[in-house]
Length: 113
Length: 113
Image (tube, rainbow over all chains, first blue to last red; front, top):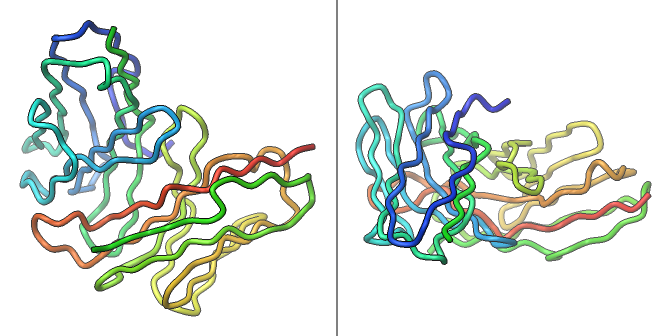
């Protein structure tokens, strides 16, 4: 158990809808990362937060947004969903930004029908 | 731009047949090189961190080594339960607005009984 909690585990929704994925980092970790992994694909970096501040953005669509709250949990909001958004969404956390590994949750599997 | 490549893309071994996976990287200001194991449908599981050339880490049948340009994950006498995708990642010096944790595409390992 990595200590990173993601909810929900599974989400099935229709095209055009909006969903929110939630991540609770390991206790004490300040940095949160979001990744997307489509079937048999590599990890695509979406966005990173450090202690509430957005630090870096990757290939994140304008329909997607995220934030990290004062208690350090994070939410990823996906709107106007398309079939191609179906994927596993992983959250990872690390103690600091430097010299520390990422620890991953078990992901939220999103299916858009 | 920071980059990570991994070879081979896929590897099939017989149980007990030792081999090595390669991770080549270019990064400005290496802060660490990380190995992960990912099982299908699960989040990557952290295995090792290597910080400087010449460093080695071991865990059961796995041994990771680091040079200035690449890292190797040696698997000695593998068992079927070692079958997974192995991911390599580098952590660069944190610079605002730049992704500092870059993953390779992974090597898919199958160990046949």
